[in-house]
Image 1 (cartoon, rainbow over the protein chains, first blue to last red):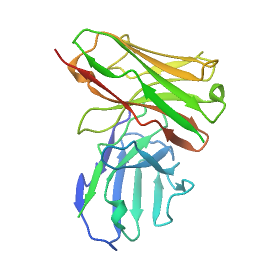
Image 2: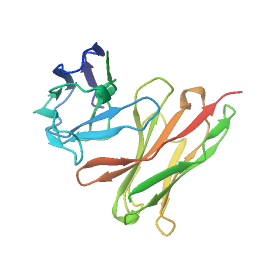
Image 3: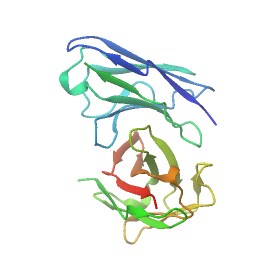
Image 4: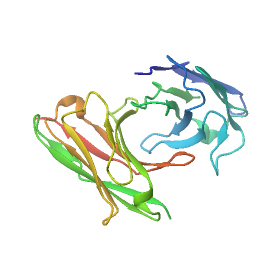
Length: 106
Length: 117
């Protein structure tokens, strides 16, 4: 199985900050890496697919980069509605593993 | 509007069974791979199972293999997950997810399964 790690596990930030979350896979996954945002009590919401493609309707302050085993999600200017937990997920091979999550709070 | 609505969750005793349903609408259900993903209270996401459009291919996470069965009824636009031999570790919100050509963009609201005596 492909193991996914994320860092940091949590971070405190302020509105307007630039935030970067890192995701690493235990084996190469090319660019089969998606990013989700999850607010409390809600289902995950797809932000980025195949490492760097912005999902329709997602603000352009979100961006993804990386390939192989190392990936990043960047929020260029944090907004109040961005305080949430972020997960990466590999869709390269079964089982489709998620990272443990990064909680972004104030 | 593309929509997924799960149902069937609830409280079940250890060793018991439950069948979850996911009603799909707003798209041609039979054209899509469908997945179940679960999330224990306060914890992260775990992929559970997937099925292709004509139900000819299924996959499972090792932790549920042999206990859970994914299926679908394309005539009813409904995805199912049969949960057997449930244990406390199976307590979670179970999400139904549509795999699109550009990512897993459609998730249901989830249904809570609680395994407890």
